[in-house]
Image 1 (cartoon, rainbow, N blue to C red):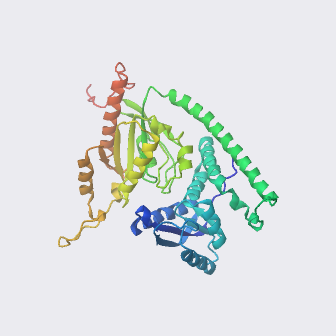
Image 2: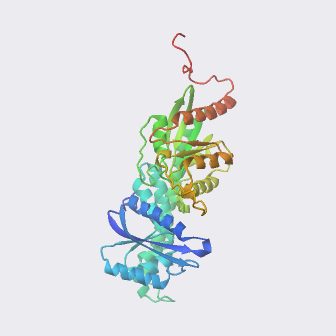
Image 3: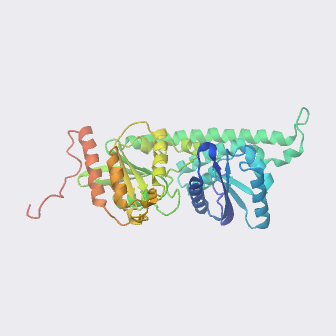
Length: 410
């Protein structure tokens, strides 16, 4: 382990680049939000963003992602600002694009996938997480091997011209394929161990917290389970699934805090982390936590729902837990303003009515940080867990006596 796991970016200055891809229906507002998120990712990795470049294109350029004119503009900016060492693109770059951009800009180039992998590598603590991240990194690296051997471009290809450099690439490719095979075997062993652990917990109801990254799942976990799960205002603060035993009134259950989702999550990473997300698949109840103070929380809900559909096909009870109501704010419209109401003009009460009216998923509105509406939250979860417990174990009168309703005289 450890070929990649220490490549953390330390206080590097970076520029961010995004394309408003019209073929995908993207708008300037969407790309601004994507770059805001990329900025947060860069900050989480340890980089400071000094400038952003965006370009509206019918579709991203097949050779250089941005147009050649824009690439020249970026190159000129980098020449004028030699302290900038890092250029981060908001999409996954093809190997050929990566080579062309590196050649033009003469800087270290990262795409969104590589940046997320880097953050995961720096956050991985357990053998399971480290193995999963390293597997995803090698799978990302494999098609990009040629960029490590730029001296080959001086050699003309063709019959009789296959030099030692090409042999070196093939050697490296074989080494990486061997490593990928070994890491997959390691993950199978870890999966078997985890399956045994989960079987030992089969007699108890399981509840899983899911949600976009940085919505407050770990804070809620700490509050409900009275434990100390690592929580901070950074993306992917939690990588490994944390499971705690919780008792509400007389009903015990297991509560799992899972890795946060994010848009454009690298496919290799989703594949690698499927074993971590087994807690989601095997949960009896899903608590989908949402940061209602985020201006685009509806998009986050969609991203989580799409990722969940890929992970778990089974219908099961779900709750939408709208967290951070203490941080919610909105812009009240003037009464004589006849323009259309925007998302930012809706009050918390209006949003509550809209989401409750949808009726397909029970909604709760809380603040884990300020402990607002936590008793209502506990009661709803208690009722859901008790219902499943009663159906699954009809002859089990629960594992704990409920003394909460006894008077002092009794």
